[in-house]
Amino acid sequence: MVKKIIFFIIFFYFLIIIQTSFLVHFSIFGLVPNLVLLSVIFINLFFLGQESALISAVIGGLCLDIFSLSGFLGFFGSYTLLLTGFYLFLKLFLKQYVRIPIIKKP
Image (cartoon, rainbow, N blue to C red):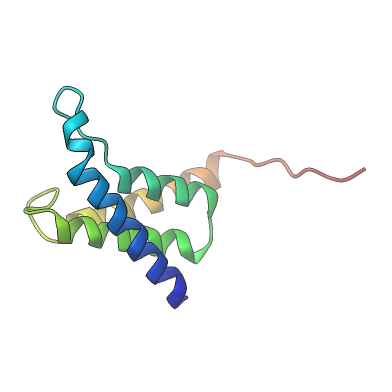
């Protein structure tokens, strides 16, 4: 558990550094891709129903809140709420509407 938290903190730290220092120069129409948001979505898709999906959403949101000046909506914790909301939406949507086929061995 502690190893997952430390791994996600380091992983999101490097993503934020890449996003804020390197990708700013390659913006398309003034928009810079949010690597933390994309990685949290992919982690939630691949680790659905596990505790690491929620941990990644919370830690990614906290890292974005720490490194942003005013936050997404203007207050601290807005990115955390946004990414946790994505986690809940993906969990409920995939549970309700997506069926993953189970491959049975012959």
